[in-house]
Figure 1 (cartoon, rainbow, N blue to C red):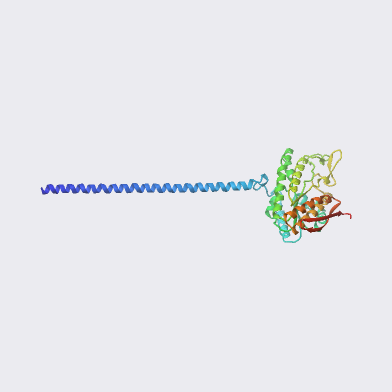
Figure 2 (cartoon, rainbow, N blue to C red):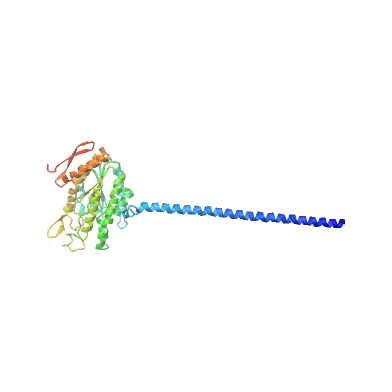
Length: 383
C-alpha cells in the first residue's frame, strides 16, 4: 500500500512537475512572440518615420528648386540665370575691366555729379583707345569728350570695343556698377555689337535677335536704375550701320541688312523710356545719313559704315550734349524734392523742353523750384 501510495505520489508529483514545466515553456514562448512583435513594431515605426522624413526632404527640395526657377526665369528670357558673360576672346579684356572697376570705386568717393558712359566701341573711343590701346582713328576723341562733357561734370567713359549687352552686364555686376544715392546720369550705348555677332551666323539671324537684344538692354538699364534711385539713365539709340560684306561703293547704302533690327530695337528703347520717369531716349541716327536717290551713311562721319572717326564723334557729342544737360537738370531737381509727384511734374516739364534740345538750343538754367512746379528757360547757343 505504501509503495502504491508512494508510486501514486511520485506519479502525481511527476505529473505536477511536468505540468509546471509545460506552463513555463508556454510563458517563454509567449514572451518571445511578444518581443518579436514589439521588435517588428519598432522597425515599422522607424521605417514610417524615415519614409516621412525622406518625403519631407524631397518636398522641401522640390519647393526650393521651384522657387529658384521661378526667380530666375519668371521675368523673361533676358533674366535667365547668367545670360551675362565675361569675354575670353580678347587679350587684356579682364585687365581693362579691372581698370574700370578701380576708376568706378574712386569715382564713388567723389561728391561731384557723375556722368558715366557705358557701352562698346563708341564709348571706348571717347578714351582714345580700342581694347585698351591707343588708336589713331579715335586719337582726337578724348578732347571732344572733355569739351562737351568734362567741364561741368565728373565724366567717365567705360566702354570696351566688341562688347555686347551680355558683356556689359557682366562688367556691371562685377564691380563697374556701384550703388549710389547721389544724382548721377548713366549714358547707355550698347547693342550694335549684338547684331554683329548675329550676322556671323546669317542675315536672317540679325532680325531674330532684335527682341533679345532690346530685352537685354532693358535689363542693363533697369540694373543701373536700381543701383542709383536718384539718377537718370539715358538710352542712346543704335546708330545706322553699313554692310562691310558689300563692295566699297555699296557698303554705305541705306537701308542695310541691319536697318530693320536697329529700327525695332530703337522703338523698344523709346517705349521703355516713355514708360519710366527715370529714363530718357535719344536717337542721333538721322545725323549720320543723308538722302539721295538712295539713302547713304555719311562717309565723312563713318567711313567704313560702322566706326566713327573724329568728325563722327564730334557729331555724336553735339547730339548728346543738350540731352545730357536736360537730364542733369532732372537729376539735380529731384534731389531737392524726391517726392513722386514732383518727379512726375519735372519729367513732364523736361519732355516739354525737348523742343529746345536741338543742335541750336540748350537749357540755360532752372529758374525756380517750388513745390511741384519747375520752370525751365532755354536760349539759343548763339545768344
